[in-house]
Length: 126
Image: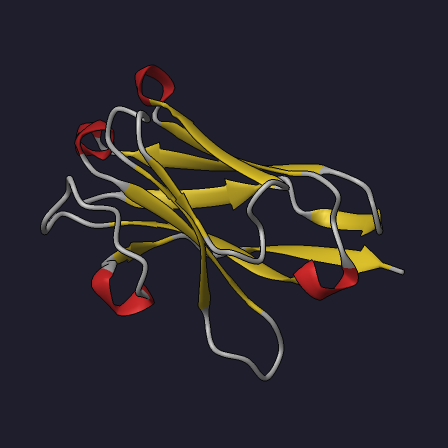
């Protein structure tokens, strides 16, 4: 069993930066790929970024490429999402997720993840 807790959200002006953290309990987290998703009001949850077990491979949604950076520290059971050049359209609740099935593959569909955090709100003002 893995529990995930996100933190680091908040209110920021357009062009600003935030760093989200995902704290994981359970020693198996370091053996599983992880993903970051977001959900804006009235919209479906969408993939933002994903990272492999070692951190050597990353995947990004086109909308965040060049602005967001995903990373992890397996020794600390932590995942991170550095968000720069934020835009009002980035406003959403952000979630980290991981899964035990096919743990080496970075999945981009929310339905493929079984463990989720509670989410952290990111609001970008114009």
